[in-house]
Amino acid sequence: MCKSSVLGFVLLFALIFKLEKPSWKLFAIIAVMTVGVIMMVAGETAFNLFGFLLLMTASFSSGLRWSLTQILLRRNPATSNPFASLFFLTPVMFLVLIILAIPVEGFSGLKAGLTDLSVEKGPVMGAMILLFPGVLAFLMTSSEFALLKRTSVVTLSVCGIFKEVITIATAGAVYHDPLTTLNISGLLVTIVAIAAYNTIRIKKMKRKAVKDAQEVAAEHAPMLNAVGGSDDLDHRQTGERLSKSDMLRNGLSTSSEFDMPAKLDGADKGLLARPPENTPQG
Image 1 (cartoon, helix red, strand yellow):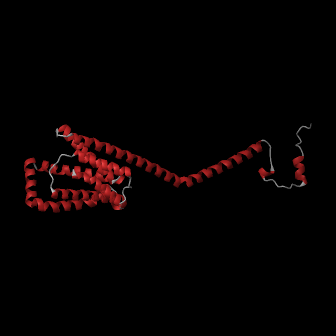
Image 2 (cartoon, rainbow, N blue to C red):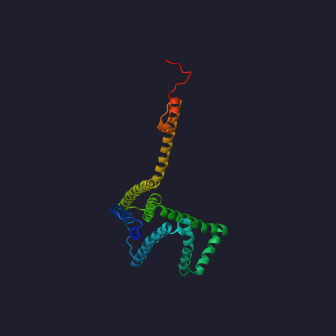
Image 3 (tube, rainbow, N blue to C red):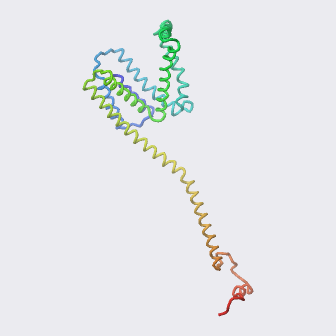
């Protein structure tokens, strides 16, 4: 039940780091979704203060981690690719896990576990059993990073809530885990909240796409206008040349079209006024 607080911490850090714009619709949907998750897992009565503090610390760290990861993916060129991010982050993850595992498990426990697996399944199958979950985790983390780069950290958390919905519904349908009326109501409320979140997210993406298209069109408008203006000038010049050709074929001439001198001497005037010799006289 306390794990549902992850969504609230994710939204909090997304607002702090300006990864999301505050919106009353978003707040309402996240609040309804949190209530639905609480209803969905209601029924656990055992409470331990130390476990509660550990869980809340983990939820707080999870919200901070995903927000910082999105900042790395979007604002740092070296980690703009999901696989590049994994290249830098995976060694750190490995060292942290080893440092935590050695005091808890001990070298003897790790060696005994690997030995038992190798004896029971064989060296090849034992290695495959160890590698297969690692490959799945690598692909899952890569998908999460790719989703973070293209959407937002809140969307990733909503996908995690949907995973819990699928897990609980499958456990009730396949393994016949008991689900009360409150649990089923929580499932329905959570699904409705997820659908509402997807609706506002799709509308926001459409508005952003239209805005980007308008900005691109405005950026290239001067170039298009310049090309259009030169085309118009070419059309006008072509029309003028065609008009001159038509006038020559028709035997017409004007001083404005052919730029004839304004003053002609008498001989030239007489030549122009004298009709041709082979022209019949009326």
